[in-house]
Image (tube, rainbow, N blue to C red):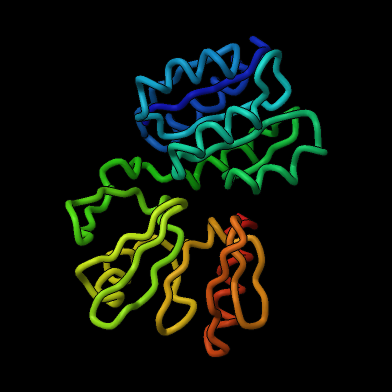
Length: 234
């Protein structure tokens, strides 16, 4: 796995790098570690190398801060795990905006750091990119790019942030293909939803980050609400 540490303090880079190497050795995993002094330097590298398995990111840095960097990354990659490490607790609330894996306060505790690293998906979802066949052409998407899916007779419509794709398959077939991704869940007999893009769970509907609304079945309300809490409490 290729892991990046982005922190403008060399001492923090060395400490976190040592932790990563100790964790990898204990798991008998091979890790390629790269350190960056600024958000800009990581972004420059990332534009050409999208195969990082995780990003360990400080927030307070000169120039572009870590939260700005995370937002830029999320515009193109919904799946790379981002772990924030910082000395400023007031930023914690913003970690949810970019679906952060976790938020650790400095000085970082070794055991807590290891427990967060244990949750990293060992294989990057690049290999899990899914092919969909809308009416015109083919489209490949990472699961995180899917916002929700709506049944439409024997077909369905897949919604991303800025597109609606009419697919030549049933919603039940799409559900089977997405079954391994726990953040995509059935919320109504005619809808699947990606909880990473849900901002509010109401009694009878879900409010997406861009204010679109998706129906929520009464029979599935508890299951969806529990999954939503789990998604953001990990």
